Length: 107
Image 1: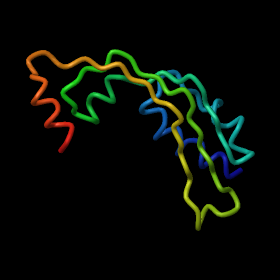
Image 2: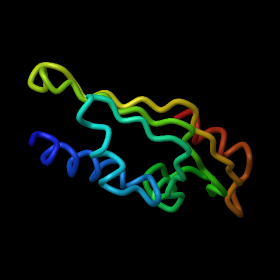
Image 3: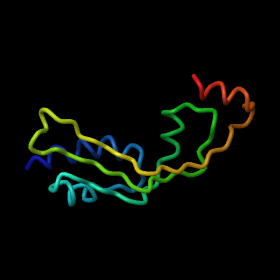
Image 4: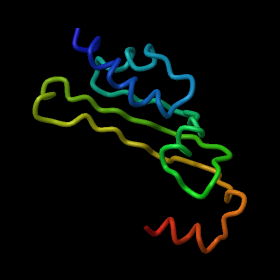
């Protein structure tokens, strides 16, 4: 029963950044407290909009995304999301100089 409230909430956050994620992907595993999703493709356009980096994302994948939901202690413990290996291929945007890009990254 609690899953019916938590699954849409998790989906609203995770689905924003992950392609082709279905609610059933989360529902099947949430009952045990842990969700493990593998080989996820990132929504590159969303990452570019959110991060505002001087790079264009050419590709992006997460090898493993783990979500731990402490069902018995939801009021006192946090839901923990762990990303194990995120791989992105980036290209410097046209017109941006390398020195400018490096300065922006250190801010």
